[in-house]
Amino acid sequence: AQTVTQSQPEMSVQEAETVTLSCTYDTSESNYYLFWYKQPPSRQMILVIRQEAYKQQNATENRFSVNFQKAAKSFSLKISDSQLGDTAMYFCAFSASGTYKYIFGTGTRLKVLA
Amino acid sequence: DTAVSQTPKYLVTQMGNDKSIKCEQNLGHDTMYWYKQDSKKFLKIMFSYNNKELIINETVPNRFSPKSPDKAHLNLHINSLELGDSAVYFCASSPRGGANVLTFGAGSRLTVL
Image (cartoon, rainbow over all chains, first blue to last red; front, top):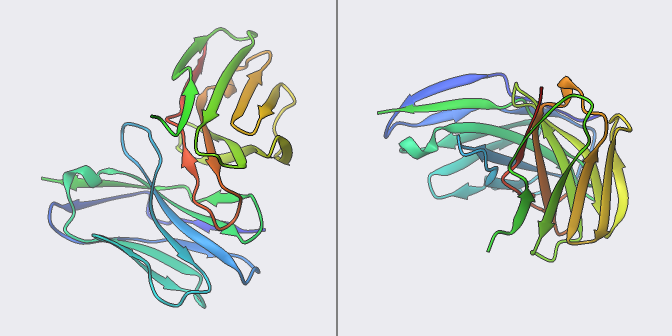
């Protein structure tokens, strides 16, 4: 069975600085997808970034980038130039290709400090 | 126009009552989901439908019954509500599974007193 682990329940970062959120996963699948979702206080779940396991290149989306280490089964999210609006819960998620099951980690609560 | 809309956003009810949450998506997606988020923010899949067909049914009490009248709608009916059912319920949709991004609704917060 696949599992997703986020070992940092809470983190804080000063505005304009960089922060990295950790995620590890366990799977025997070779073809899968990884996601980071953000849940601000408004409760709405929003996709931050998506990575295909078969792509070696790390995904980036403006200030958000990932460090995908397939052999280590690690998928960390780096937020550069942190903004107050980045304050949210961040969830790492895994989905095997061809399945309909998305497995979420327990989340990391990020607080950006002014 | 909201892509995935859930109603109601808030539900407060007594133990033992029956309640429903409705979900509609206008994205043309084939697959819809119900997730439960507990007080510790843990997100767990409950059900998934692909083109009106049930494809995921996790170990959820049979007091919970999903219904998909068409691929744009997925409703959740809960019988005999219990205190432990208090949670935020999220509806989501995707074009298909696996590779695709989930688009979530805004969530429905259910409080059972």
